[in-house]
Length: 117
Image 1 (cartoon, one colour):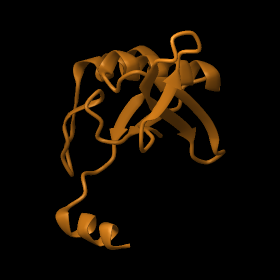
Image 2: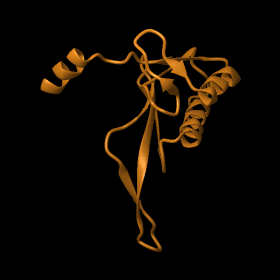
Image 3: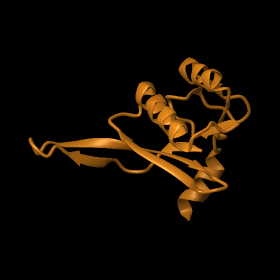
Image 4: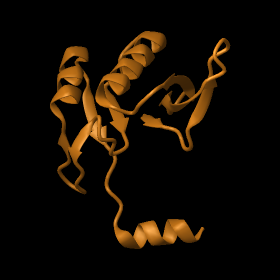
């Protein structure tokens, strides 16, 4: 399972003291809770696929399926039944001989109920 975590974090350059926002990528093997995390400057496709590749290398293998949220770097069009995976993610999955399973899009009733909790 892969996604970017909540709010942006910030890195500070030790020399210039410039503060730069970063995205926080997280990959987890859900049964073992084995987790990989990495900061990237964007959530764009090159950064996403780089982080995902690093995660697979760190895990030391490739799962049968990668479950993603409906992130732009992996899904062109979300759908409850037939999401459209973008070409870069499809090529990545073919290269690593794995499947990509985007999560199902929530309907408005579910979203409203979750926001009330």
